[in-house]
Length: 198
Image (cartoon, rainbow, N blue to C red):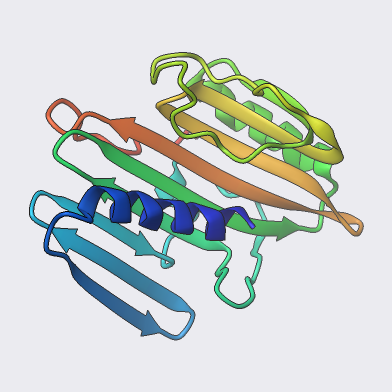
């Protein structure tokens, strides 16, 4: 599951960045909402499972229901990493809808179009790449490898500021994931998120 991997990746980044510093780790668990925070001088990592579609900057498909996660995977995550040189924000949420994938995709093609040129990736979509080596201002692409499958992913933006929607069949309906990724320079970039398309 992507949301679980995103949380694990953020914590791995934190451990790498913060290993030489004195760390303070806090963990809160309130029902199905969980918050983990790692703080060190000049750097921090925060993972919060209490997040909404609005945090992704992507509108929620009408009538969609949150997909309930199982075990450690809550089906949603809001990850923030801040170091002296870099900020990373990743929001990922999973939903289901009674409508078929074609209808969900049509809705999101229209909505994501307000952010720019929408790239459509077919087949089992790769996980969102953070820091692909192409540079944060490079337009998003489908990546090198596309396996066979029935998932379609819509991507818009740049490698450093992207909105993704991954859609696949779920019985007679659909399952989809909203993903927002933002990389920023701590000194020059304080604006995460942005205006949600109408």
